[in-house]
Each structure stands twice: as structure tokens, then as C-alpha cells.
Length: 272
Image (cartoon, rainbow, N blue to C red):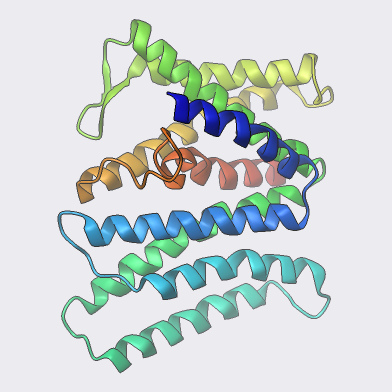
């Protein structure tokens, strides 16, 4: 408990400053999250009950290159959206060439598949934080994403503890309940209404308060359950113990994996 309080007291103000004011620090924060989460993911694979071999260093380098390509794409007039496609194709060719060079026939496809899955699952999903930042009112949307996830997680926990009776996904996460999940959807809706009528989003339409609240509540919990599914499959309790009392980076930010891209494309599609 003390460890959790220390992380919260030190981490929340720093995180809020990065979301609202940070430039280079925001890029570094995203890189830190991607690099650490990828390391944790690959370590789970290697130390899990199946002991799956992956190309950890190559995967982490590929994951870290995604935000760098995004920043370069935004800053340079010479680069186009094809640059990212080129980077992905080049990385795949180099990666496969490396596998050929190693000459490992046994479980070679498994190595490639799990390594690239980590890059897509963590690198590409988390990199949407930088895309959100470049939207109109992007920094407020970044802060909003974290606030809504916190509201959803907190409500799901307290509702589940107090009145949760029906299991949501007993084979994946036995402690989660349907009642808690409902609370985890209602809370971000109420939080969006609070942001509209009291705080900093007065011009957002009411329907989008419900739309964004529902999406964050639903996909945040799917992100959480997805990581729980992976840990169950690998036979791991926590991705790591780097965050005192909170598990690992992947444990702490699993909801954000799905919320960041979903929120970005929702804002983009509806032009909010």
C-alpha cells in the first residue's frame, strides 16, 4: 500500500505536467512506456510456462522507432505517410534476413510472430498518444484519456468489491464482475459530463460525452482483460514489479493500449 501511495504521489503531478506542457518529455515518456512495456512483454514470453524464444532487442528497437518516425513525419516536409510503411517493410525484411542468418529452423516462425506481435500490440498502440497530442486541444484530450481511464478503473474496482456478484470473465480474471464492468462504463460517462458542464470541454456535444465515455469504459476494460489473458496464457501474475505495488508498466497502462487508438480515431472521424 505504501509503495502504491509513493508512486501515485510522485507520478501523478509529473504525468499531468508531461501531458499538458511537455514537448520532448512527452516523446521520451512514450518511448519509455513502449520500451519498458515491450521488455516486460518479451520477458513474460521467455519466462512463462511455454518459454517462448523472441528477438527481444530487435523487437524493442522496432517498437521505439515508431514514435521517432511519427515525429519525423510531422516535422519534415520531405517525408510522407509512406515513410512509416517503408519503415515497417524494411524492418520486416531485415528481421527475416536476421532469422535466415541465424539459421534457426525450429520455432523460427514463432519467434518472428511473437516479436512482431509485441511491436504491433505495444509500439503501434501506445504511439497513438503522440497522434492525439497533435489534434486540436490534443493535450487536453491526453489528460482526458488518463482521467477517464482512472475513473473507469476506480469505479469498476469499488463497485465490484461492494456489489459484484456475477463473474465477468472467470477464466481470464476471476475477480472482475459484470456489476463492476457496468460501473467502469458509467463512471467515464459521468466524468465526460463533468468535463463539459464544469471544467474544460463546454463546447463538446452531449452525444459525444456519452460516445467517448462508453468507448473508454468498454475498450479500457478490454485492454485490461487482454493483458490478463496473455498473463494467464504465459502463467505470469505481473508483467514486472517495477512500479511499487502497481506491478509493471504493462499492468498499469494496459487500458491505455486500446483507449489511445480508439479515442484518436473517434475524435478524427467526428471532427471534435
